[in-house]
Amino acid sequence: MPRDASVPIAVVDDDPAQLRLLTNALERAGYAPIPCPDGAAALAQADACRLMLLDVRLPDMSGLEVLARLRETHPALPIVLLTAYIDVRDAVAAIKNGALDYIEKPVDLDELIAAVDDAVGEPGRSTSASGEVSLPKGVVAESSGMAGVFHQVARVAPEDAAVLLLGESGVGKEIVAAAIHEQSNRAGRPFVRVDCGALPESLIESELFGHEKGAFTGASVARKGRFEEAGGGTLFLDEVGELPLPLQPALLGVLETGQFRPVGAERVRHCDVRLIAATNRDLEREAAEGRFRQDLFYRLNVFPIVIPPLRERKEDILPLAELFLHEPRKKLSPAAERILMSYDWPGNVRELRNVLARAAIMANGATILPADLPPALQHQPAASGNDGSSGREGVLIGDMEAIQRQAILEALEKTGGNKTRAAELLGISRRNLIYKLRAYGM
Image 1 (cartoon, rainbow, N blue to C red):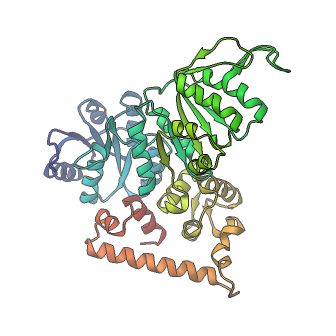
Image 2 (cartoon, rainbow, N blue to C red):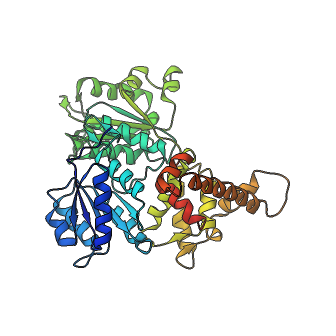
Image 3 (cartoon, rainbow, N blue to C red):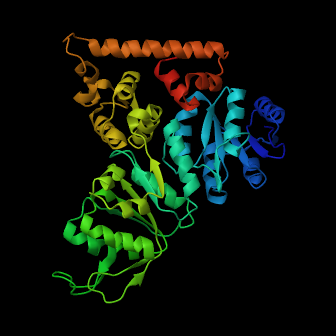
C-alpha cells in the first residue's frame, strides 16, 4: 500500500548532515519532510506538519522544552524524539510528558520509517472507525495482548454501549475503564467509580441511587447517589459480580429505562450515564448457575473486553517497571530484570507495583539488585523443584539468558543488524528487543 506523499513530517536537527540524511530517507519513503535546524523553526512549523521528529539537543533550546511548549499549543501533534544513548533517560521522561516514542542515534533508517508509519497510519496502522488507537499517559501496551485491548477501547469508546471488563484482580481494569471514558464523547464529564465488593449490602442501594432525608436511621440529610453524581459522564462499577442478587433488579431497571428512585423518594429521577462494569469472576457461568441474573449479565455484556494477566504479556513487565521506578529514580540491574521476567505475577500489575515500591526502599543506591526484591521472587525458580540442589536458580536463569541471547544474535544476523526486522522475527516489539539488548549487555 503506497504512502501518502502529501503527509508533512517536520524533522528537527541542528546537524546539517543528519538533517539531510533523515529528510532524504523520508522522501524516499514517500513522505514530505520539512527540515528544521533549531527549536524556533520547529515551533514555527507545528501548524504545518502531521508528525514531528525532534532531536533532544538543539542550539537555541532543548528538544524537551520544545516538547513542553507544543504539548500546550498543539496537544494532538505526535512527536517522536531522536536521541543519543546518553539522553535515553530524558527521552523516557519525555514520553511520560507526551512524546509518542523515541529513537536512539545513530538512527536505524528502517526503524525510523517504521516508527513514522506507525505514528501517521501509513501504510497499515490499526485504527478504529473514529481514528487512531492512542494510549493514555502512563499506560504500557508493548505486548500484543494489551495492544489488542486498546484497539478494542478505541473502537468502543465513541459509542455509548455498555462495556464489561473481564480479568484477574490487579490487571488494570480501572485504567482501561478510564481510557474508555477519556476517549469517549463524555470526556470532561464525571468519571465515577464504585467498588461493589467493598460496600456493605445494606448501603449499596443508597450508594448507587441516593436517599432522602429520614429514609432510614442515620439519614439525617438527603444524599445524591453515584448514578446522579455521574450524570452526563461514565459510571464504573468495579467488581460487579459481588453485587447481591436482591439488588440486581434495581440496576437492571436503570439500564433498561434510564430511571431510578432514591431510597425513600416518591418520584423517579432520570439519569444519563455510560456504564462500564468489571469483574474477576466468570459471570456467564455465575449466571448459568443462578448466582447472577442472566438478564443483567446480557445487559452488561454488550461489549466484553478481556484483559490478559501479566504472565501472558511479559513484554510489558520491564516497561512497567521503568514507569513505576521513574519517580523514585531507581533502575533495575540486569539480574533483577531477569528475576522479574521469570516470575508469574499472580497479583499482576498491582503486585509488580508493590514489589518495586518495596525494592526502591530497600535499595542502598540508584540500582535495584536481586537482594532488594522480596524473598518469594529471589527463590521462586528453585521452589518449583524438589532436588534440593544449591544454585539451581542461577542455572535456570543462566540457561534462559543463554537461549534468549542466542535467539537475538541469530535474528540480528539474519536481518543484517536491523532491530525492527529482528524484533518481527522474534515475535516481540522493537522496544522490548531494545530492553533485552541492554539487559544482556549486547
